[in-house]
Amino acid sequence: MSIEDLARRRFRAEGLEPQAWSNGPRFHYPSHAHPYGKLLVCVAGSITFHTPDGDVELGPGDWLDLPAGTAHSATVGP
Image (cartoon, rainbow, N blue to C red):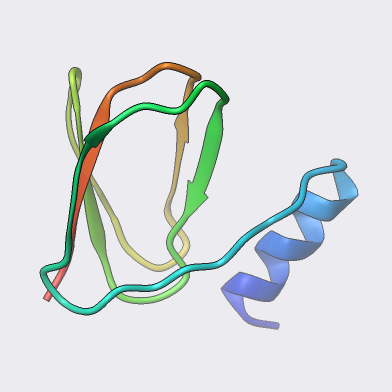
């Protein structure tokens, strides 16, 4: 079973609705925040999230729990 399938199964078991997205290499998300918490799981490639507490690099199988209101930007890996 793939990382994505495992993540979807676990999220749904907890009553969450997983959503997938992807971007090309070096795509940059500008700084922003959400009024809700976000649990981010990298299923392929890599992405670095830039937060006030420092950078967090995610690769396949890694995850990041962002509390509501946390400012962050992100850069997709090569």
